[in-house]
Length: 335
Image 1 (cartoon, rainbow, N blue to C red):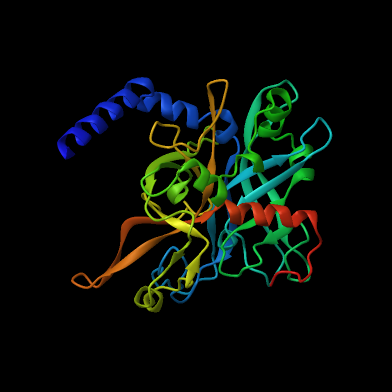
Image 2: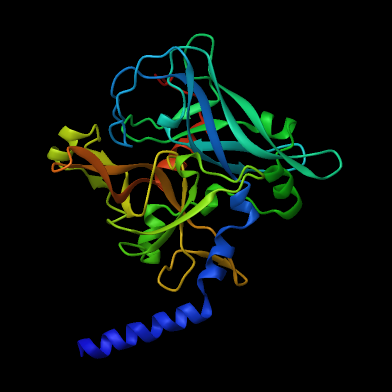
């Protein structure tokens, strides 16, 4: 019976490959909707003098220096209620990708922009994040749970003013990333999405991008823990790395590196995943979360940390909660 089941599974998997090969899958994931919606985020920082810890794991000690260096990560653009002269544009990323409060600070995002003759060019656009009072601006929202590393910035004015290509495409074609594509926990349960479901990560690991355009890098993996229950880190790991006790999300078996933070995570449009959105046979991305970091382990024989190919993903629920916060005033400004 087991041998028959394995044979049947192999036959069905072969049918899936024939119907939807790797090239077709990648082509459907990497359409302009996602390509132009994924941006590289950076800002200038002073080089740290001591070891720091984050979801990316310990960073090596660096010498003191007054020369600025650059911090960065990935973000993606959600559009809501878009028209020729109206609509909301939200830049979604991790809180740790943004500069901390304390002094006035902007971020730069790398985007495609439309020229007056209809052609496009790539440019860096500055977005204010921290105001003159050293606090995040009203346009910046972070998740109310300090252990949920998700943030969003309302950038509609900048996007319309600078003619973002993704915005022009959205108006012309009606295709763009929106909250309707968020695969919340309830949707995952009803679609039977769980451990082993294929996912794709779209971002800029190690700030890697093609200098001619804004195209991100596609990485593949699978959901490694139950995506509907959250994940609790064990005490031993929490003593080693500054991880929260509970993550509103899940782990993925995928290579995640600095720069991957803030990457979009979408469900793979293959036969083994049932949560993809399909309209008249055209696949649309089902967004399951946002990358926040990777899990390092201490290799005692080498006395150093090594990555084990597990990434931390915050859920689509967390993304939706942050975006929804723009519909109400901030009760207690984030600190």
